[in-house]
Image (cartoon, rainbow, N blue to C red; front, side, top):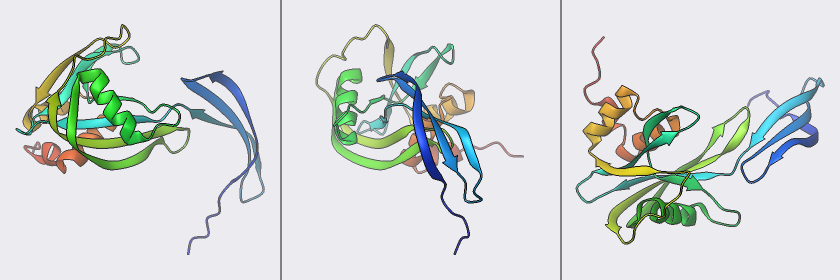
Length: 190
């Protein structure tokens, strides 16, 4: 049995609210020792979904687009926000269709994970989508210009190693989706 005890939140106040994008909350917390911390900051952003979408041949649908915070063009998996009152699986199906024009017959949840255990941020809901079929044209969005491409597991492995897939949630999704196959093959010998 652990001797650890939870912290107690005595007060919270929102110090920045840019809904629906971002809120910063300042908590006053009481530690198990009795010490009071008056300025513990948390960040809240909407939950989101991330989708590993595969065709029958095993190739994975990826998106190439510019990410302003990184200041570069990268590869990512289809993703998007979970709207208020929407289930994560509903958001995943909607985002896949909106961003790519594809639907999938088989869906599986790969889990839901908090992005940052210290600051909170949000929860990422990871999904695998299989048996893709093109049903429409992607919805155009001037803030999200992208190219769609299908990549083999070997190409994904190379892109991860080259830094072209730099986001940890994408790497976690792809690792879980492939059972680490793309990360374990051809590792450099030390």
